[in-house]
Length: 320
Image (cartoon, rainbow, N blue to C red; front, side):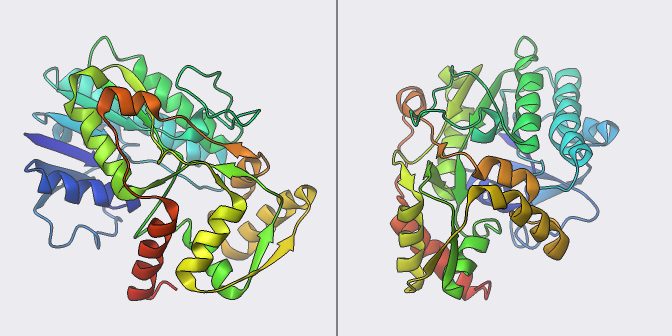
């Protein structure tokens, strides 16, 4: 069986690529000329030069593969145009390339996000049939990507995955919060609640969603089954680092200023104006019972041990 992975050089994509190889698949990775290949070094993969924003570069890459895992996209950017080009236009290009050049594909898996659905308004974990109300440009463009993918269900077999916050080794986004805890001061804007998922559990769910017939044409939330408060998350990271930081109370009305300052001082990073739009909401929670029922999705890692394993990896690789 042959698989094509887009976004294979990134955090989640590199873990998926390694897992697919362990499953015995013949894996190709779509990479740009500027891609950093450090996480693919030593893996038995074929590198296919291309870019999802260039539709013509995808034609040969999608031919003859049994599975396409579309993970490429932007989680953070400085402009709406960048989000649109990567998350909407890029998705449109690869879906069209598959539908026109690979009629025998077994599954097209699109990695979306809880951000595409938006936050829960009352704290009830969202289910797949919830009203979709994204609050950020990232979430809105991921939802547009979903709509493009599902519009092609009559031509190719598709599955959409909506994970919440994903963390683990190689994650550069949550690293910011590990560094805050290590510094001894953590900004605190009140108690919020989140679903989380360790990267290896997500990878297992993605692979199951591609292989199981009942997943065709479906959308799935995936999470570890717990709801974590801001305090739970700080405690888990604090235990992993053996530090007890001071919480610096921050009124929510100053958060947009924090996002703008972060962009000016550090460029594109996870603390940005668009992400602040999400952080102002208290309930980023989802219900993974559908994935459990249809896919037998059984996440193994809770945040306490996951944070420890992540912190250990950061230390070993001198990220902390």
